[in-house]
Amino acid sequence: MKNESKKTFCTEIFEKVPKERVDCVVIGAGVVGIAIARELASKGREVLVIESGSTFGTGTSSRNSEVIHAGIYYPPNSLKAAFCVRGRKLLYKYCADHGVSHKQTGKLIVATRSSEIPKLKDLQNRGTENGVEGLRMMEGFEAMKIEPELQCVKALLSPVSGIIDSHSLMLSLVGEAENHRTTFSYNTTVIGGHLKGNRIHIHISESKNLEKSSPPLQPELILVPNLVVNSAGLSAPSLAKRINGLDHGFIPAAYYARGCYFTLTNTRISPFKHLIYPIPEDGGLGVHVTLDLDGHVKFGPDVEWIGNIDDISSFLNKFDYSVSAERVEKFYPEIRKYYPNLENGSLEPGYAGIRPKLSGPRQTPVDFVIQGDDIHGVPGLINLFGIESPGLTSCMAIAEHIASKYT
Image (cartoon, rainbow, N blue to C red):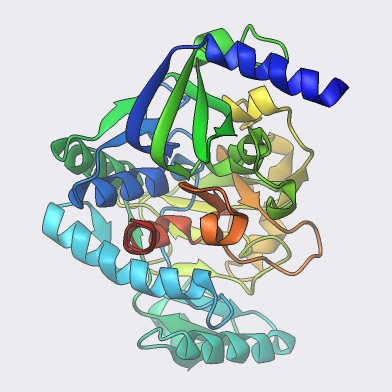
């Protein structure tokens, strides 16, 4: 009886909130959400993108290595493998067609001791099975000939890997989405939802009002869409749990891994022409060399598992993105395994990002999760969970998949 009266009370509260009917809502204006909005709009859908931040791409999309991945690391037949390989091709073509700054630098994954060689061969086999073109195993002396500052016993060359200006990419995608009549609503937060009459209702609040709120959160507006894509990145699982009527059994556990980057100073010329990656580590791909399009060099990210964060902080991207200068002490020995000439004092704190992971410390990495009503049974709702790396590379392939499967 108590639950019934509570449900009636909640329904009465929602009845008094203004409502609007809309076609498609995309939650989150990161690179994946923007790509989805552009793709849906180009197919004739009316799209509204709701973003809690003051502009697009303020979360994971702007705090990563800006690498176009080849598709080497991911289990065959996984979504990560399929979307990375397909997305890479779509991305290179899009950049070439739209003047988005990028460079196909190539990448060397290096074994710095003989015990790592079997893992390198496994990566070559996996990449080949995933359809990655041009992979070639190199002896140490061959790799060190093309990269004189490098030290390794063997290396796997991936010629199709590259780098991209992710901000320029997002700017271009936003422009195209807007040309197809997509509306972007910034400083606006989706705080939950409910089902009524087999339709999903989305609860909206202004972000500035949310900062002063305390639970239970009350919506200022309710949207009734035909299609909702939860592309909220780090807060996607928290948001899904606040949709009344969605079975929580379909929402995976969320883990957060902060990664810090340090920039190389005291040099005008980059010591490397290729991206340099060690053998992958628990939670990430190892502290690697990333080049940017201006020729600057950064090393990272490391892996620091952080605790859960409350819903409001998650919705408003109030994660701790500070870079502790002390962490650099762990960087020097890791980097010197493949770059022995790295000088003391040459690394300065850069920036940090947080990976939205679905597996925790020492757990097997988990694939992207994309759920429609065929899985969770809520009509018109698509949840995207765990869209970490290679999310940037995969963004256009994910958008293509959603537009073709769910519209």
